[in-house]
Length: 448
Image 1 (cartoon, one colour):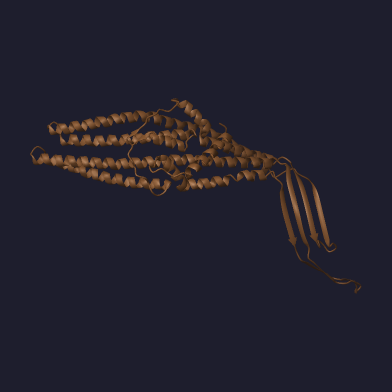
Image 2 (cartoon, helix red, strand yellow):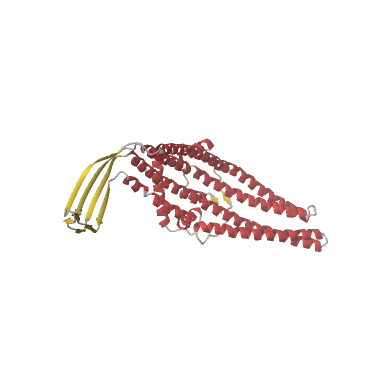
């Protein structure tokens, strides 16, 4: 896909998102609804949109370099002149005289470039800057989707942390009551009671830490979507789908061509090339059509009214500027080489980010399967430990450790689910194809 085709696709996407912004939000908020809210409330996105609108004026600026320019000049002054008389042999020959008049003039100047390579380069640079504004805004759109997804999943994980901390606390409280009951019946020890009580206090502290973390994540989400965060509903399952195609090299190749930062660096190369052409054009002659019309009232002592009109060609040829033009040409050529290197760097970065996201999905699927099995094993272990404690084969410490392992495994499972979902978003962003529809698809993959 060429840059022009990409720009056309981005304009279509913005039009689609604008229509969607006018539609009412559904009652149950998901990632897609949060994204629409973020487009209306995120200050960074609003600033990027304003910058984009300003950058689009480069189209008109670029055209203006090759269009004619007209300048109207008007002037009105008052002049007063005194001339002293002259004498010869003490005899006056010319009397003293005083002259007063009020010259007024108006002139219209025309300049139409006919051949000016520096102006052509300036036009190309302006058009490239308009395209860069498109790419920058598209990159901010991708960034907004990523920030919404990351903030939302961080918020969900924080809520999971609170829920699990409370559940763990309740389990410890139950174990404490069990230890106290056994101790009173002469079947337990004071150590078991104190250890259970310590675990309860630790769980209470962890619940407080988790609650504070949730408040922070809520504020971070509100910074993007505005006030009013929807209730967090725990993710109970995630549809696991491997990348298609399941070949990281194909994804990396796509990223080399369509990653937004790569496209932006290619436009920067266009800008640097236009600047190099502009610097080089300083050594070339330029040709312009010029015209001038002037009308004047009392332009001098002897004329009451005067009109002048001229039209012709003007050629300017730089001869020597102290070496400045040559130095500027070398400087611009060096900056152009830097821009080429920046394109290569951005392509490599895109490959790395694509590979990381691809492996994050592949490894995430394996990690989720492993953690699901770990949770099942931990649940069975807790049941076994509790049964063994009742039979006198397991200690209170064994039960407490098993419960702690269970809730740790559940938290790690939720964390891996969110990491997997974020990796899917990052992979789409790395190839420059992330949009609101991807969030809708992601919403459909989440079970609650």
